Amino acid sequence: MQLARLKTWLGVTLVMTSALVIRAIADDKPSKVNQPSDAKTKTSAEKKPAAVEKAPAKKPAAADTAKTDAEPIPAKREAAAIKFAQQHHPELAELLGRLKASHPEQYTKALRELDKTRERLEKAKDNDADRYAILLREWQLDSRVRLLAARLTMSSSEELETELRQALTERHDVRLQLLTYDREKSKTRLQKVDEQIAEHVQNREVSIGREFDRIKKSAELRKKPAAKPTSKRSGDK
Image (cartoon, rainbow, N blue to C red):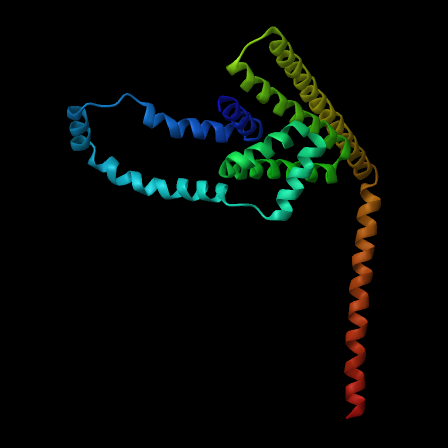
């Protein structure tokens, strides 16, 4: 039973973003705060009536968000997300399968996050295939780090710590690779801008003259058709 819970938890930790994890922890904290005595409860109830009235106003938004996260996504998107995981993160795909059987709601939430990641990476692929490859590797390593961190909280070993350090090192290097790649792309863009600036400076008078002539000719052509229809109509009469 404990092993099953561990696998489920690892699956959620692996897929969900840090924002969702933090939110889940925050939601659990109020129930774990020291229980107030009857006297303290009465005092807080008497002193803070306004807080009690304001609380319900905040709950619907959180409830709607939770409801949306729990709603099943279209089958086509689910299949695409699972296929993406199978291709690029087999361990994640296996954990999702176990999560679906044991905790459907958590599976849906995790799948939504995976689908968002898939969509974001595929857009990056359309824009720049080389940058996409780096982003994909960063995501794989990021998931690996979260998984190892989750395992480390359950049991510690030198082998596990070595794996975690190696994953962190690889992720650090990949992020550096991404920054270096973006810098080089920026250099290329700046070089093109510099070339355009130089061209504008060098061809200033020529460009202005060409644009002036073009506009003048266009204006003259527009005047001629307007005069002809008038003469024809007067002749017909």
